Length: 354
Image (cartoon, rainbow, N blue to C red; front, top):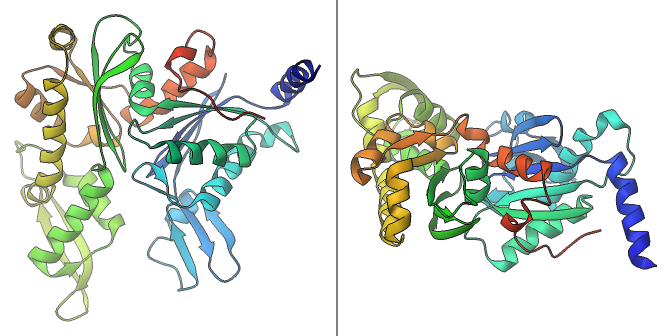
């Protein structure tokens, strides 16, 4: 009787709620709605009034406040290194995205089924926090998928076949290096060195080299403008504005790609080492498949100039950048959503439902 009632309630909520796929990233959150595609791509930033605990802004609007707010307003990132660091704010951010997706349906109590991408290395506690956060935000059922698998599905790699596929997903908080076959991960490395760490490298380099204090946002803009992993054919430059640590006054300098490449050398080297170690742990048969098929790069870090060529040179293997690498994980969750029954074996065991 109870089971039949649960099925009826599930069908009822299914008619008034969308099925949603989420790439819950450290830097950005992307939302895929079944039958509609990617509908939200916002920074994972929330502006909070510390006095009243009120949420003032979420996403792009909150990101614009970073470094520009009075002392009682803070712009926080509730996810650090790919995992939840502030449970309550993450829950409110998810609820905001759920409500936004269902706005046009005039649904008072949306209860969506949700597929969420999480890093391969998360602990049981961290995984449970994601599930509970989504349920508390209003999800009816929560399915978790490891990000490298979601990225590989989004990049249309045949991971359910017996042949090997290799993907490197460089996000904001984590880099996931994984070799997959038969729907599972065979060898992998998950490290907390990715886009955010590269931004910190630039902040530290500019401080040490030029006695100039800059913010994380300026560092990110500089990385996007002139960052590279290998020497470029033509030198490129970009201005950086910040506070002179000697005089305390505003100052502008011009940096070039060679200097930013030097700043990024440590992080890029760490990623390269994790790729080498993962390949060493890969069975020879799968390694032969990878040499034939090539390595696929996904995530925002895949857009760093020359990174694909550097990996290709050091691994002696062809490297391809996924189509629209920033959305590979969320597209993977969307593909799973569209055919949950067929792709159920790539999901992690489900613990919560409502």
